[in-house]
Amino acid sequence: MLARVRPIVFAGPSGAGKSTLIKKLMTEFPSAFGFSVSHTTRKIRPSEVDGVNYHFVEREAMEKEIAEGKFIENAVYSGNMYGTSIKAVQDVVDSGKVCLLDIDLQGVLLVKKTDLNPYYVFISPPSMEELERRLRGRGDTEEDAMQQRLETAKKEMAYRDQEGLWDYVLINESLEDAYAKLRAFITERYPL
Ligand code: ADP
Ligand code: 5GP
Image (tube, rainbow, N blue to C red):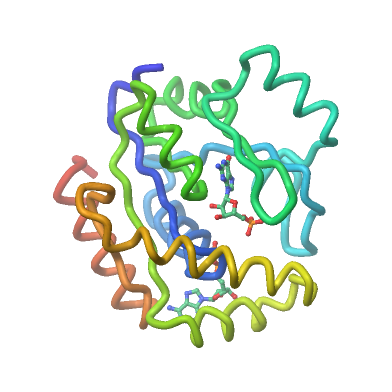
Protein backbone atom coordinates (compact mmCIF):
# COMPACT_ATOMS: atom_id res chain seq x y z
CA MET A 1 0.00 0.00 0.00
CA LEU A 2 1.38 3.39 -0.99
CA ALA A 3 0.58 6.30 1.31
CA ARG A 4 0.59 9.77 -0.26
CA VAL A 5 2.38 11.15 2.78
CA ARG A 6 4.98 9.09 4.55
CA PRO A 7 3.69 7.36 7.70
CA ILE A 8 5.80 7.34 10.88
CA VAL A 9 6.66 4.10 12.64
CA PHE A 10 7.46 4.29 16.35
CA ALA A 11 9.42 1.40 17.80
CA GLY A 12 11.45 0.72 20.92
CA PRO A 13 10.99 -1.38 24.04
CA SER A 14 7.74 -1.62 25.94
CA GLY A 15 7.71 1.15 28.56
CA ALA A 16 10.02 3.51 26.62
CA GLY A 17 7.22 6.05 26.11
CA LYS A 18 5.95 5.43 22.57
CA SER A 19 2.24 5.69 23.43
CA THR A 20 2.83 8.76 25.60
CA LEU A 21 4.66 10.60 22.82
CA ILE A 22 2.15 9.55 20.17
CA LYS A 23 -0.70 10.76 22.38
CA LYS A 24 1.00 14.13 22.86
CA LEU A 25 1.45 14.53 19.09
CA MET A 26 -2.17 13.64 18.38
CA THR A 27 -3.41 15.99 21.10
CA GLU A 28 -1.40 18.91 19.75
CA PHE A 29 -2.17 18.17 16.09
CA PRO A 30 -5.50 16.30 16.02
CA SER A 31 -6.20 17.05 12.37
CA ALA A 32 -2.70 16.12 11.14
CA PHE A 33 -2.12 12.66 12.59
CA GLY A 34 -4.11 9.45 12.80
CA PHE A 35 -3.19 6.29 14.67
CA SER A 36 -3.05 2.90 13.00
CA VAL A 37 -5.10 0.78 15.41
CA SER A 38 -3.42 -2.62 15.60
CA HIS A 39 -5.01 -5.94 16.44
CA THR A 40 -3.81 -7.86 19.48
CA THR A 41 -4.70 -11.01 21.40
CA ARG A 42 -3.40 -9.66 24.72
CA LYS A 43 -5.76 -8.70 27.53
CA ILE A 44 -7.09 -5.16 27.59
CA ARG A 45 -5.60 -2.87 30.29
CA PRO A 46 -7.84 -0.70 32.50
CA SER A 47 -6.66 2.46 30.74
CA GLU A 48 -7.40 1.13 27.25
CA VAL A 49 -10.42 1.36 24.98
CA ASP A 50 -11.22 -1.38 22.45
CA GLY A 51 -11.06 0.04 18.93
CA VAL A 52 -9.01 3.04 20.05
CA ASN A 53 -5.75 1.66 21.48
CA TYR A 54 -6.13 -1.75 19.83
CA HIS A 55 -8.71 -4.05 18.37
CA PHE A 56 -8.72 -6.71 21.09
CA VAL A 57 -9.43 -10.04 19.42
CA GLU A 58 -9.30 -13.79 19.92
CA ARG A 59 -6.32 -15.67 18.48
CA GLU A 60 -8.45 -17.79 16.11
CA ALA A 61 -10.11 -14.73 14.60
CA MET A 62 -6.78 -12.99 14.09
CA GLU A 63 -5.12 -16.07 12.60
CA LYS A 64 -8.00 -16.37 10.14
CA GLU A 65 -7.70 -12.74 9.00
CA ILE A 66 -3.93 -13.09 8.66
CA ALA A 67 -4.43 -16.19 6.48
CA GLU A 68 -6.86 -14.16 4.36
CA GLY A 69 -4.08 -11.64 3.66
CA LYS A 70 -5.63 -8.78 5.58
CA PHE A 71 -2.46 -7.79 7.46
CA ILE A 72 0.56 -5.74 6.42
CA GLU A 73 2.63 -7.35 9.17
CA ASN A 74 2.12 -9.38 12.31
CA ALA A 75 4.31 -10.71 15.11
CA VAL A 76 4.23 -12.51 18.43
CA TYR A 77 5.40 -10.37 21.35
CA SER A 78 5.56 -11.65 24.92
CA GLY A 79 3.30 -14.56 23.98
CA ASN A 80 0.56 -12.47 22.36
CA MET A 81 -0.15 -11.76 18.70
CA TYR A 82 0.01 -8.21 17.34
CA GLY A 83 -0.54 -7.00 13.81
CA THR A 84 -1.28 -4.07 11.54
CA SER A 85 -4.23 -4.65 9.23
CA ILE A 86 -4.26 -3.10 5.79
CA LYS A 87 -7.52 -1.40 6.80
CA ALA A 88 -5.94 0.21 9.90
CA VAL A 89 -3.48 2.10 7.73
CA GLN A 90 -5.88 2.63 4.81
CA ASP A 91 -8.45 4.34 7.06
CA VAL A 92 -5.88 6.90 8.22
CA VAL A 93 -4.47 7.43 4.73
CA ASP A 94 -8.00 7.94 3.35
CA SER A 95 -8.67 10.58 6.03
CA GLY A 96 -5.75 12.58 4.61
CA LYS A 97 -3.80 12.36 7.88
CA VAL A 98 -0.24 11.21 8.51
CA CYS A 99 -0.43 7.62 9.75
CA LEU A 100 1.37 6.85 13.03
CA LEU A 101 2.23 3.22 13.81
CA ASP A 102 3.45 1.75 17.10
CA ILE A 103 5.02 -1.63 16.34
CA ASP A 104 7.75 -3.89 17.65
CA LEU A 105 11.10 -4.64 16.06
CA GLN A 106 9.85 -7.71 14.17
CA GLY A 107 7.14 -5.49 12.71
CA VAL A 108 9.73 -2.90 11.68
CA LEU A 109 11.74 -5.51 9.80
CA LEU A 110 8.58 -6.74 8.04
CA VAL A 111 7.36 -3.25 7.14
CA LYS A 112 10.78 -2.55 5.62
CA LYS A 113 9.96 -5.22 3.02
CA THR A 114 6.73 -3.43 1.97
CA ASP A 115 6.16 -0.27 -0.07
CA LEU A 116 4.78 1.70 2.92
CA ASN A 117 7.99 3.78 3.07
CA PRO A 118 7.58 5.32 6.53
CA TYR A 119 10.05 7.19 8.69
CA TYR A 120 11.34 4.91 11.46
CA VAL A 121 11.71 6.46 14.92
CA PHE A 122 13.24 4.47 17.77
CA ILE A 123 12.11 5.62 21.21
CA SER A 124 14.77 4.70 23.73
CA PRO A 125 14.64 4.82 27.51
CA PRO A 126 17.62 6.59 29.12
CA SER A 127 18.61 3.30 30.83
CA MET A 128 17.33 -0.21 31.48
CA GLU A 129 16.81 0.72 35.15
CA GLU A 130 14.55 3.60 34.18
CA LEU A 131 12.71 1.39 31.69
CA GLU A 132 11.94 -1.07 34.48
CA ARG A 133 10.81 1.78 36.77
CA ARG A 134 8.43 3.03 34.06
CA LEU A 135 7.04 -0.42 33.30
CA ARG A 136 6.44 -1.04 37.00
CA GLY A 137 5.09 2.48 37.48
CA ARG A 138 2.49 1.90 34.77
CA GLY A 139 1.18 -0.82 37.09
CA ASP A 140 -0.61 -2.88 34.46
CA THR A 141 1.89 -5.64 33.76
CA GLU A 142 2.06 -8.84 35.82
CA GLU A 143 5.44 -10.08 37.10
CA ASP A 144 5.78 -12.89 34.51
CA ALA A 145 4.99 -10.56 31.66
CA MET A 146 7.29 -7.93 33.19
CA GLN A 147 10.30 -10.29 33.12
CA GLN A 148 9.49 -11.29 29.55
CA ARG A 149 9.21 -7.66 28.47
CA LEU A 150 12.50 -6.75 30.14
CA GLU A 151 14.26 -9.65 28.37
CA THR A 152 12.76 -8.61 25.04
CA ALA A 153 13.72 -4.99 25.78
CA LYS A 154 17.39 -5.96 26.10
CA LYS A 155 17.27 -7.57 22.66
CA GLU A 156 15.44 -4.60 21.13
CA MET A 157 17.93 -2.13 22.62
CA ALA A 158 20.71 -3.95 20.78
CA TYR A 159 19.14 -2.76 17.52
CA ARG A 160 19.03 0.88 18.60
CA ASP A 161 22.50 1.65 17.35
CA GLN A 162 22.31 -0.40 14.16
CA GLU A 163 23.41 1.68 11.20
CA GLY A 164 20.69 2.53 8.68
CA LEU A 165 17.78 1.04 10.61
CA TRP A 166 16.34 4.27 12.04
CA ASP A 167 15.68 7.75 10.69
CA TYR A 168 15.74 9.06 14.23
CA VAL A 169 16.74 7.69 17.63
CA LEU A 170 15.07 9.65 20.41
CA ILE A 171 16.18 9.22 24.03
CA ASN A 172 13.09 9.79 26.16
CA GLU A 173 14.58 11.09 29.40
CA SER A 174 12.64 14.24 30.27
CA LEU A 175 9.27 13.95 28.55
CA GLU A 176 9.12 17.66 27.71
CA ASP A 177 12.58 17.61 26.14
CA ALA A 178 11.88 14.39 24.21
CA TYR A 179 8.59 15.74 22.90
CA ALA A 180 10.25 19.01 21.81
CA LYS A 181 12.84 17.01 19.84
CA LEU A 182 10.21 14.76 18.27
CA ARG A 183 8.13 17.79 17.36
CA ALA A 184 11.16 19.39 15.69
CA PHE A 185 11.92 16.20 13.71
CA ILE A 186 8.33 16.10 12.50
CA THR A 187 7.74 19.79 11.77
CA GLU A 188 10.88 19.73 9.58
CA ARG A 189 9.29 17.00 7.45
CA TYR A 190 5.57 17.77 7.36
CA PRO A 191 3.69 21.02 6.70
CA LEU A 192 1.73 21.29 9.98
P1 ADP B 1 5.25 2.38 25.60
O1 ADP B 1 4.07 2.86 24.80
O2 ADP B 1 6.54 2.58 24.87
O3 ADP B 1 5.10 0.98 26.11
P2 ADP B 1 4.27 4.26 27.60
O4 ADP B 1 4.02 5.48 26.78
O5 ADP B 1 3.10 3.47 28.06
O6 ADP B 1 5.36 3.31 26.89
O7 ADP B 1 5.12 4.72 28.88
C1 ADP B 1 5.43 3.83 29.94
C2 ADP B 1 5.27 4.55 31.29
O8 ADP B 1 6.31 5.53 31.42
C3 ADP B 1 3.94 5.30 31.41
O9 ADP B 1 3.47 5.18 32.73
C4 ADP B 1 4.32 6.75 31.08
O10 ADP B 1 3.47 7.66 31.73
C5 ADP B 1 5.75 6.83 31.60
N1 ADP B 1 6.61 7.77 30.87
C6 ADP B 1 6.66 8.00 29.54
N2 ADP B 1 7.63 8.91 29.24
C7 ADP B 1 8.21 9.24 30.41
C8 ADP B 1 9.27 10.15 30.78
N3 ADP B 1 9.94 10.86 29.87
N4 ADP B 1 9.60 10.25 32.08
C9 ADP B 1 8.95 9.51 33.03
N5 ADP B 1 7.93 8.65 32.75
C10 ADP B 1 7.57 8.52 31.46
P1 5GP C 1 1.90 -3.44 24.43
O1 5GP C 1 1.37 -4.78 24.80
O2 5GP C 1 2.82 -2.87 25.49
O3 5GP C 1 0.82 -2.47 24.03
O4 5GP C 1 2.79 -3.63 23.14
C1 5GP C 1 3.82 -4.58 23.13
C2 5GP C 1 4.66 -4.41 21.89
O5 5GP C 1 3.86 -4.71 20.74
C3 5GP C 1 5.20 -2.99 21.69
O6 5GP C 1 6.57 -3.10 21.30
C4 5GP C 1 4.38 -2.45 20.54
O7 5GP C 1 5.11 -1.54 19.75
C5 5GP C 1 4.13 -3.72 19.76
N1 5GP C 1 3.00 -3.63 18.83
C6 5GP C 1 1.81 -3.00 18.99
N2 5GP C 1 1.05 -3.12 17.89
C7 5GP C 1 1.77 -3.86 17.02
C8 5GP C 1 1.54 -4.31 15.68
O8 5GP C 1 0.51 -4.07 15.06
N3 5GP C 1 2.52 -5.05 15.11
C9 5GP C 1 3.69 -5.34 15.74
N4 5GP C 1 4.60 -6.04 15.07
N5 5GP C 1 3.94 -4.93 16.99
C10 5GP C 1 3.00 -4.20 17.62
